[in-house]
Image 1 (cartoon, rainbow, N blue to C red):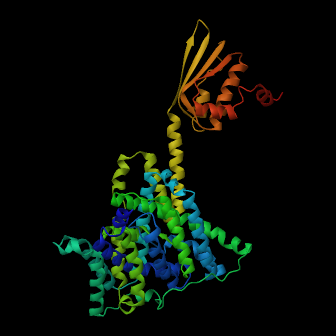
Image 2: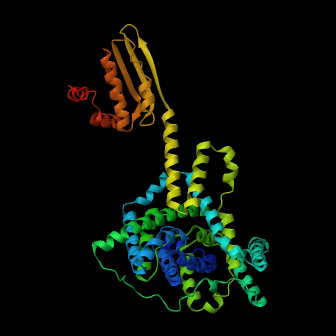
Image 3: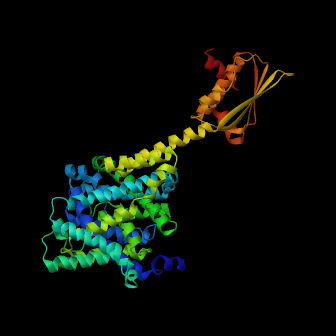
Length: 495
């Protein structure tokens, strides 16, 4: 236990502290922007980012992952805020947290095993595209100074690590933000800054219980939004955890992360913040800047609040161009460039799943829709592929006039039609043996196909014997099959 705590908190102190500061700087404009998207005051997003980051540092299941207010969640809040106001949003945030805690206790985090690698790749590529697209408003209808600052920022980010010694000590995104801010202030450039995004809060968050009636009508209003927020939040968090696992070559506790996200959202709602979840962009900034442990997440949250309250006169001077450069770096680093090369090498079905996931996420700006489309397609392709791995061979014993059919493979809804078509019902034989010792029956569609085959043979006058069912297959056939139940057969035939 002690070793685990040391590994999570004290194994990478310098790297975690510096990375947390970089992340905090990147969190501020995004939290403000997401608040504007949701239609609430900027302090709602900033308080949420502070609270969620601090709480998740202690209770989350993935060290080094950054959670805060996110765009995906903000998009789901727009209608609720517009129609019912902030208080109902806070209530929905609390209910979102409760639902996520329940998801953790019901171990729904394990459902991530049904998400294929191609869906994760599509998710990552779509997020990279969305992160880049989110920077475009800062690069349109602006002066040449903005482009120069952005280009200079990117040059610092990619070239600074090449410097001996110092390039490995300081995170280049942090150097980019500090140096570009200094240049903008020195030259007195008239460019957009963090201060132009909205007014920063000047007080600590306080405990707030949502001022809404505690009745069934309120539940009817907030439940649909809370369910959507809970699903999208957990989905983005689980996908981000998968990506951070890959980047750090470590594992995470998905169910603990579900519970942690729920606790963090309850805390956010009670402090006047909006619901949030894991952020892939900031998580990658954290990892790329050297953050690995829980201390980096805690630092990001604490330093965010310190900067907002204490360093606000400096913070508002940070040019958006510097932060745009950091986010473009995140976009480039997030995108799986190998997936483009793999389009030639991977199977067509894998490529289709990846591309469809990207298209749906980018088109709808809804991660849940894209992942759902990808998982559905991947499942259909898998079912179709497995359905082809079923073979029925036959052998005739002329002495006993017995035809033996040997079934090999998986029999389920995708292969049941092929199973039925493999029998010759018109052949004049006295006995038919269906050997299922090398087959497995998965669903009632497969059982129905077996019933159909047996009853057709009997109609043609043959004696049918089914042998070799394994225990699992025998259980489902005994429960749902009718070919060995005379009364059921009579009822089926209309007698």
